Amino acid sequence: MRVRQKPLKLKGIHRVKKRQADGSIKIHLYHRATGLPLDEQNLAQTYAAAEKSMKTRGEATLATLIRKFDGSSYFDGLSETSRREYVWKLRRIEKRWGTCPASTFDDADDAQAFRRDALAWQDELAKTSRRSADNLMAALARVLSYCKEQGVIKFNPLDTFKRLYKSDRSDKTWTDPMQQEFIRTARAPMVTAMYLVRNTGMRASDIRKFPWTRYNGEQIQISIKQDQQTRLDSSHPRDLRSPRQPTPRWRAGDAHHHRQSLQQALFQRMVARGRR
Image (cartoon, rainbow, N blue to C red):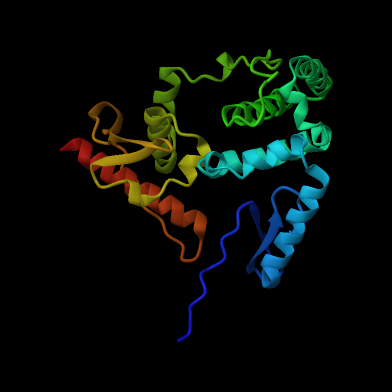
């Protein structure tokens, strides 16, 4: 009797899509922690080699704590965007602090000394970008807080820190008259996007990827958190009634116009629902 082998499941693999000269898409595999390329044909062997090199250089150091964090179920439960953002942050942190002994965070005096050094690092980074400096410090603090929660270390010296970047977005906020003027004059697909942004608070990138399957003709389903969902009633008369009647356009094989057609069709159905 032939036993069917189970598919190989490995954590910490970063997949990068690259378009080839012939227009096809090829997926390259990299070891997330070390950045080493992985051979898809010999995935188990190259993955084991990358893990071995990582353990050799990062045993009982801050790099070990980073591995525990990015290999955790908590990290896997983050959104794809959050995980992707963590990749470059953790690499920068490991490059600067990877050799710091993990025992540093088991001694109160050593942990306090690390805090002073980390805050000085933040100030140095802030000379180039305050926002980037804050993001890196937040990522480092999260690694340490996670490891403390898991009982791996005793002290988290970055449980609090002052952010250096301050944003004033008052000049970028659209007033209600500005929104109404946009809705009155913009193209139908952009009006649809405005309704979604205004009523859901979704990011522009999320709006562009918003799937047709999330709209059932009456409600739009959006995810607020990984474990929560909410439904937005799409028939609110104040927002969805409009005299504009968009005419869908279509170009076969054109992804941009495919998205535009779906947006226009969604807008038409939402308007029709609002007039009932």
